[in-house]
Amino acid sequence: MSIKMQLRAMPESAIRENWTWLEEVMGDALDRFQAERRAGIAEAVPYHFHALNKVYAAAYTPHGSHDWELPVFGGSPVYNATDNQPPFVIARPSEVREAGDFLAAASFDDLWAAARPKVLPPFSAFDEAEVKGWFLTHHTDLRTFYSRSASAGSAVVKGFWY
Image 1 (cartoon, rainbow, N blue to C red):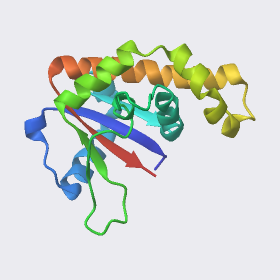
Image 2: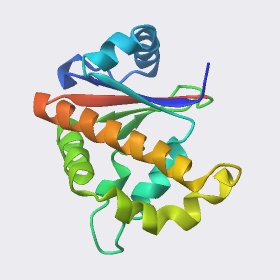
Image 3: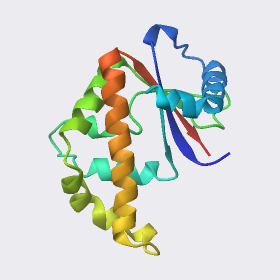
Image 4: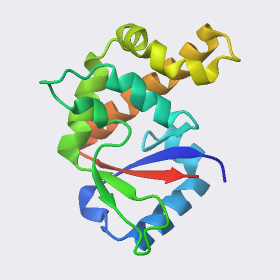
């Protein structure tokens, strides 16, 4: 299995706050990922989701909103009973709407300019324009996904696969 953050939109009423159930649902969704992505109910960020969170953290102001946390790690965690697996995270429809609003309003160039010194060093073997392009693609994909999910009134379940 590859390292990725998987997102899946679904009605909040269909979600069980049970780690084993979420593992089964999200694992099955991985098998249908391409079709669900085309349908607008699934998205993924491979490898870079921790660094993408740093890009969004560049929007943080000490006395401002914490909306920047929502696209990647925000929501309510559901832990494994033995705590030896990453939690699944459930973003409620109101949080999905906030994440969508944040992403719609955020200037990627401004975020990149602020986050560049923290994000770029681990990618020093690559051309900066290429790295920026990866993050811009992730940002654009998440903006579209959260916008669709918010319009549908959906919750979003996030799985972190290592």
